[in-house]
Image: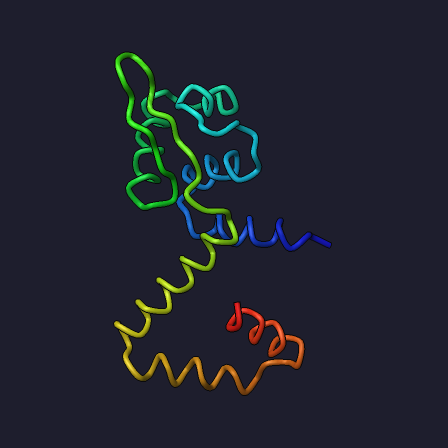
Length: 133
C-alpha cells in the first residue's frame, strides 16, 4: 500500500505536464539539494538538454511552484521548491475549485454539495480534518 506522502506526490505530479512532473519528482523526493541549479537537475536527468531544463525551471518559477535567487556575476540561478507536494495539492485543488465555480457558477456548488451526500463516514472525517486545518 502506498504511503500518504507517495499518494500526495503522485497526485501532485498529475497536475503538471510530463517534463514539469519529472523535474518536480526529483525536487520533491529531495534528489537534488536545495538550493539547486540547472546543472544539479541535469546531473539527475542527463537525457535532457540544458536549455530544456532551464526553460522548465523558469516556467515552474513563473507558476509559483519554485522560487529562485537571481544570479550575480557568473553564478547560476538557484532554485527551491516553493511548497511541498501536499501544499501544492491544496493550492491546486483550491484553484481548480475556484475555476469550476467561475465556469459553472451555482451548478458547480450544487454538484459539490450533492457529492457530500455520498461520502463514507471515513471520508467525512477526513474532510472535516481538512476543513479544520
